[in-house]
Length: 238
Image 1 (cartoon, rainbow, N blue to C red):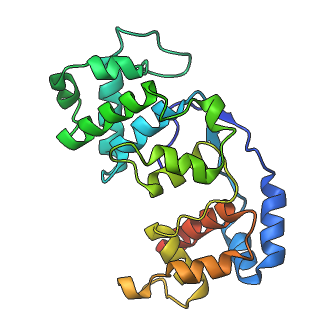
Image 2: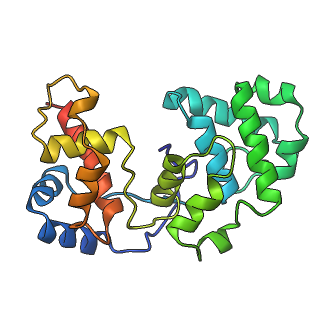
């Protein structure tokens, strides 16, 4: 997931030390990975509504981070005259109505593809009609209910919402079983995949394998998932 635009962060709604201690006690193999990878350092960005977080997620889909960041910045800059920027944020974020009212040429000039422009307009419309809840409402909803609501938006799939649950909302028990990095990290940690092996689909972990193991990880699957990504980082350094 992309880094927050502001350097300020929110505290996680759970204790990282408690989570890693519980995971280490429940799963010796994961305990070894945690010891090797180091502390859990996830932090939540401040000042992002669901609309803002999902706008960024849509832009970043299937793009290199730097290219996506450039498009995101250009889009925000194109709305700079419509709203006052908040402290610590380089450009103002458009409201859903601002985005709906923007001409296609403005969105294309920022670098958005036709499909992403349509997705952002649908996100804006569904934010205005209440399909996309406010942050106040979303905090009271279950993970499953959030996924059900947000996947109604064009271009938003379950994986995108799972990333939001982990990286924006700090939900502790999310397991994105379709994520490539998590599947590879699981294979490296539990299935004997070697760091220098060329990865083919048959070598990646299956949903069934991960869900079976994840019974040991409850209620901190998000933290365990984060360490599966760290397993990939460690493998890349060998």
